[in-house]
Length: 128
Image 1 (cartoon, rainbow, N blue to C red):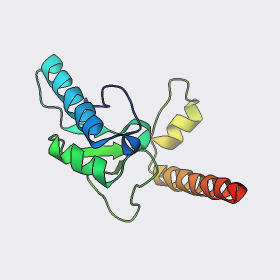
Image 2 (image 1 turned 90 degrees about the vertical axis):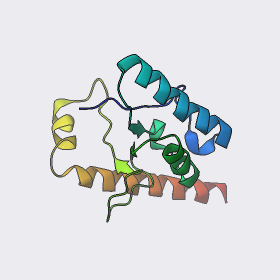
Image 3 (image 1 turned 135 degrees about the horizontal axis):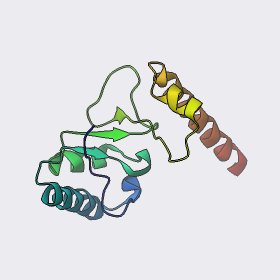
Image 4 (image 1 turned 60 degrees about the horizontal axis):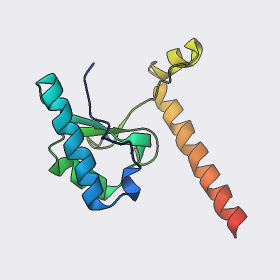
């Protein structure tokens, strides 16, 4: 178990300005490092939301890696700034928790990516 940054205000980073991204990442890291008197090397993207600019800002802020949720996670190789993270909400049913922490958790990620792809496609289709 480790302590990781999750930004100051939990914004959708990929939709934030570069200045705001930098402030969110650097200030959160500094605050946690001061509070715990140890390096904070990891970042968990709020909502799993990131893009190339966010990755570059995270590297510039001094993070060694970051965790995302579903979108943008490469499934064939590991990317240190797009590692899969499985969210476990407070009221998670035990059967679902066991599934998420099992060795078959990647199936869960694949299914969530497929679900988001389909929902996005259907939304675009409705608009046209």
